[in-house]
Length: 154
Image (cartoon, rainbow, N blue to C red; front, side, top):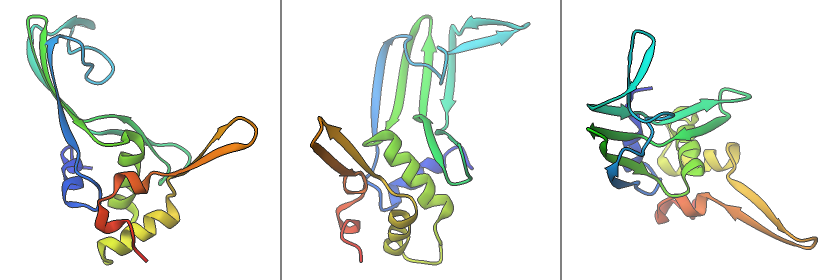
């Protein structure tokens, strides 16, 4: 998948993501460690440099069992300080895992609404939270991550 493929989410049935800015001492990983340089099998913090991190995901038990790992981001470090732009989607893992299924596994010959219906049938985002012995709440994350016009599809 293209490193910038996540940008397609802006034109999809999913709510647009927002950019979150960080400015301060180096604190944002890219993705697992702070920005660093590998030289002669040694790792040293970057003094000056850019890093682009693409959307982090993997599949687990099947080709469509998507697992979100990290947000896309752009990082610039300069002598211990960092400016980072993080692509922040609502309800992170539910958003990106559903979008990956929509983008990679739905029938592209169908309309966006039909593809969302396919997502809802084949890649459910309904979760049950139990509170005590007799209380439970069912959360359908599609209601939280889709644009309004795609919520009431047939």
